[in-house]
Length: 357
Image (tube, rainbow, N blue to C red; front, side, top):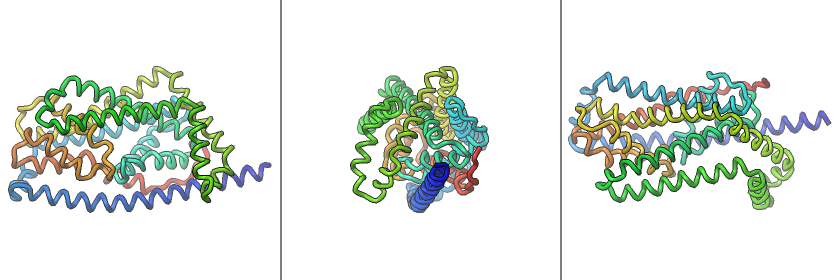
């Protein structure tokens, strides 16, 4: 019996490693697409208006506000890492902050180079597994973090649309897209809550998926491991129930997430101040960034490439002078997107040995 269990664990480990390698292969292909698309967009923006003026904007950057935008980004990374650290505590897992930062940066990298930011969480689960955390608990940690994040974004979206929606009248078509983005975010939360806290419905969904894939080779493998899958689903739901048992820690996780969102949405204002005099309020630029985020969240290309740059240009062109808007778009994309790839890459490429602790 012991031998069978060991063989099962070995097979399980090999399957996770294979899935990890497949995810990496797909992600690197998308990384190449992202880099090429980014280069095309950057070159395009340099040729909007006067090329020499667009180049000269980088010579006139206010270094104080540039440094402040970098600080916003660091706080954004650290806050999300602290949310992962806190949700791990809620799930009863001892995860050092250093490892939480590592898992976060792995997620930042893979989210940036995959469509719909779909690669981040699976690769974070793999990373936590290699750090010695059971897959069901790792999934619960990251699902908890995602639920907290989506809930916070949706609440903020409601506040922004109720408070600042009248300022979007100049962009009526984008107002409709913002509402659509809000509905999508709300729907995601609804289905995640059902999946996370309804074992009966989750089991029905699993049985349906098993029925659909059973004729295929990988479906037969899933069928042979059905009992193990059910056990892991049960462990996942048990870990998710711990969320309600730790209200204070849950509040701390929400606080860290609020800080994360606040500083990420503050980056456009820093860019505005590094290029322009202070004529527009922080709250207005913050709200425009919030609406833009709702719109581009579900664009099905890595980093919402093209839509993000175009959206920023259309939303913020009235805040920047014609000579500065192209430079502002490029600086914003570097700070809010490409830095996640550059800084996240070393964490993603460093593969730790499997820990049994």
